[in-house]
Length: 352
Image 1: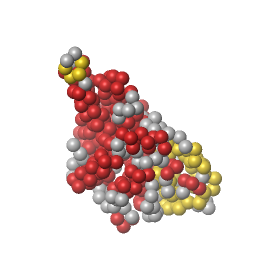
Image 2: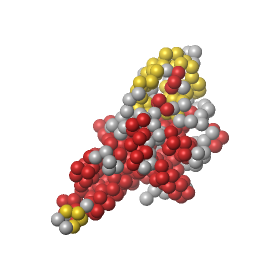
Image 3: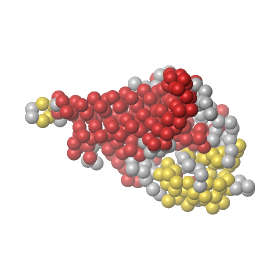
């Protein structure tokens, strides 16, 4: 099941392309080398990385829902490329501020608090956990009411990886030249954080779905005592838990995506990230238990999804942060406003 109202051709083409390119060996190789240039090149030829960015700004057109559908498939196929960063996050920052979109990879500083935009238009400071910083043509960030675009190689890069084996580098600048533009209304660090959380929600939904399917297939193929292990009640319980969390994550992602398509959608995004973080914890436990030792081997693909889920659930806000945010939002509505908040979501104006 995919996001409603998206272009079916996008879904079919991206699904087929990822299915052909993101083999077990290709994902393993990307973790070893820190990149997958062949996969990126083939994917970039379709224009998919720039979906939802206006054509006049250098994007591929389409809607936010189209972009989220592609990200769902990124998670479903464990695609080891920076799709979210190039389009929905870094590309969005550049296009919103009228800055040039490069033909190559764009990344983003999720936390730009350590970066400074100097009066002469140069950049000083460090940004940690920069996705694919070593491979990016431009690094985008928003700070002090401005959007900046800088070449990561103009600074020093300390290569690091996440639990998923994906590059999460530290980039440091000391007076690097940059392109600077005023950030328009609605483009600020908080908006980037919500948008980043939404990107992770979409990818997590796809990863949990694929992980659940892998578990159903494996337990039906694996026989013990003369019958598939999927027929044992204890194993069936794990399958049900995983399927429930896959459905929950999918619905949360779709709800948040539709809300963000209509407006800011902050309440739905916060609730979705919280739900997906929790679902990832439960689903990985259930799927790994059902697989037993096989799920822990490098030769079997389950870890490609579970490790990504463990990594993505901490990015753009962990469970504690979003629990606190949702709790404050509910408390601020007061007793009479709680039900309208739950049913109306972001259509309910916040009470200060």
